[in-house]
Amino acid sequence: VIVNGSRAHLEAAHARYPALTAVEVTVDPALLARRLAGRGRESAEQIAQRLSRATQAFAVPQACRLAQVSNNGAPESAAAALLTIARKQLAR
Image (cartoon, rainbow, N blue to C red; front, side):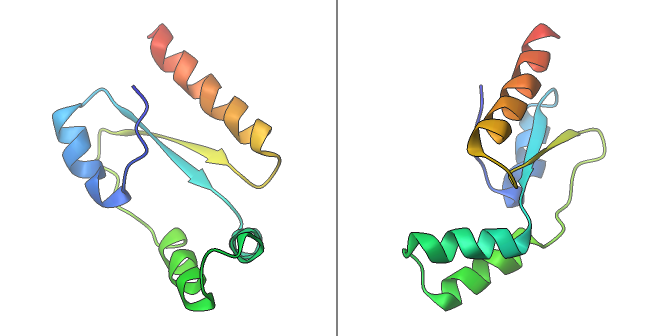
């Protein structure tokens, strides 16, 4: 199962599903700002709030596996990286 969830709920999710692997999708803040502005769906203030949240550290439970996927390139590259992680987990 793949779930798009909030960082704030990672601890509770890990407590309920201790075998989960969390995946953090990262992107350069300047690139994220350009992408969000280009979409035209959010105000400058909303974009600033998104950037602030995206760059904040978050707590990862001690025994939780964490993988990272860079979303700085083409969407297909990030998707391929996510699929690789999912396939490795399915093979366990």
